[in-house]
Length: 93
Image (cartoon, rainbow, N blue to C red; front, top):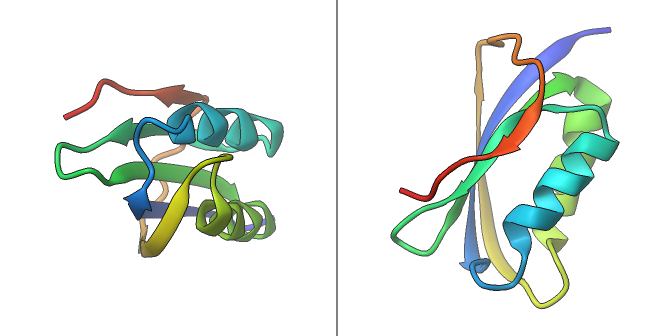
């Protein structure tokens, strides 16, 4: 299966609503590697690595997000795979 890497920026009401927690849980359930963190400008940034179909499903989830989230946009950049091995929440920047 083809592995891909998606670098994602999610805008809207995505901080203070459990978005990072739910992103981590959803990514782990999908066997994706990567990370998620809050940005100072109110967005959430994430990287997902895994099989194309699993990444596409995760990106669809990003548009819905956690309960209480209101997602206004999801920007995606595809990058070279770095072969990450797990999924984690990173410190906010």
